[in-house]
Image (cartoon, rainbow, N blue to C red; front, side, top):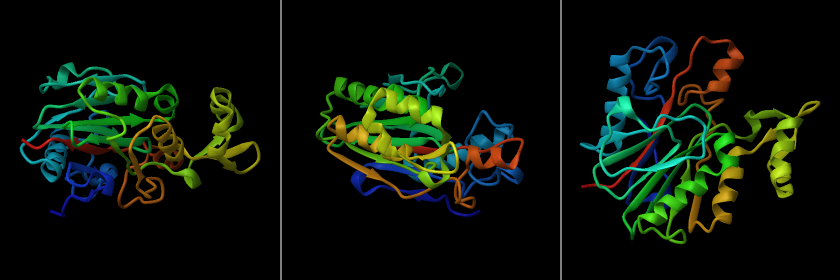
Length: 255
């Protein structure tokens, strides 16, 4: 069995966290690797084993807490593990309770992990373009503050996601962001006719900085071309594949 690959951010040093990919998993075939996506048609027992391995690689002995993600701007606060069958619909989760492994699954969208070490508060957010423009990171910061965090002390790390060279969008997509704020034009670069390249992690990082987050780090890892390391919804779509895996990002407080 290969070792689970854990990518970590310097700004979160000292906090149990990790951005995982597909290395070190039990899945085979189309989902080969550490597929944790319960929405895929991978074998449920294999997905459960992959999720167990993921938690063990980041925060051994913790209980995984992952919301039912819907591309929203909603954040929930958790104080104890919930029943997986009753997961709340949200795209971010925060806690001040040790022993909980907050998890966010992605397959191109931006995973963001947050921590205020002094307050003992952590958070995780799934920022696809809808959640990003809708304010999922804003909601996460507010929820952390309600637990005693202060945004100038919060460190935030943006993990593996689809990056600008791989993220082609049309003019109407660009206009949606520019209409929200003309300064957003800086996150789009020229592409082929009637298309542009969108810098989603750059947008999320700028939004975090504008919100007063103390430290922001972006890992330079593009999910689309790094096939041996990460799952990618867009890559699978371009290839006409019948399904795609998901990777997980985890953060938690040690007991």
